[in-house]
Length: 437
Image 1 (tube, one colour):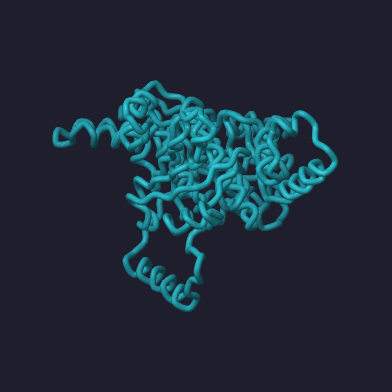
Image 2 (cartoon, one colour; image 1 turned 120 degrees about the horizontal axis):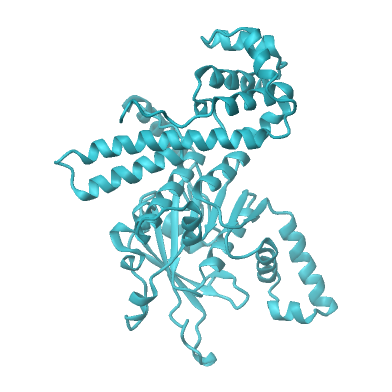
């Protein structure tokens, strides 16, 4: 990288953030999801931010002297006069998020420049092939986007101790029939297939109107019913639509009947189901969010059991970029994989399978090739499930089986599902149930 080029920064806005937090320490919460000390270009500004956050977290007073002393203990010597000057740079903390956004945006640009410089240097290596260069570029941009994610190294001894401890715990608490080590999906056949949901990215793909959303809603509702906390990112349906679908499925009343008006008995059933839903630890987040924004929302909450992102195509559009479709989709999938790993949770991501390819087959059954093949987003997923409804295009009611198949094309978590399939009953209210149970 040309060292004569000045990296993007705005020391004034960095000081405005510090001043705002000195004026009103409660404003720390407004910046916690946006900034870290490493986002500040001027070292002493970052040290001041780190000191203020540390003081607040420990319950101590935040003032000029305590910040100065805390910075000194961190190896950064400043005078109270410097802090006083910074404090005078802004009269109020009302615009702290605006200042923080500016600092965060410039920090991203610096990370992008550094990461891409490394990728460019790698591209000069004549021994690197095209796939390796592309992977280096994608990895560089993921590193820039996920600047708050820190890689962690573990020694062989540490890893051995961890897995030995886990094995001892499992031996002391053997599984009973129907139990799994991961998070139960509430569908016995799917639990048998995958051994539950583990930490990582689970890609669920199918043609349009096959039942991707219904399938994911059912799994998410089962997790929430068991006491888990679910965050459902919906780019296509509003929170009222999601609630209505789940309540309709719970009480077994068609949506059209609810729209037409319920009699007293059915209304009581609907009310009981609505009460059930209201007591779940469930949040629906609407709109097209980027992978970085999704990661931020999950970090804020901190104790999420399961996240669902419906769907990849809209999330990729929100993330921007001008690459080919499969490159953009794969890059977004890798970013969401990082989100799942960072937050130590299973993240279910939906995606539409290619229509042209599946329509060309007599049974219209999807394969991995319909997800842009080995170069597509499936490359980033730990688990890939392809859904199929054999009678989706059958319009004779007497011949409908109302079944939905889930075939596992990849399983890098528990290594139990690859090449296997399970079949579920797909009810008209959108419920997915174990067949013959």
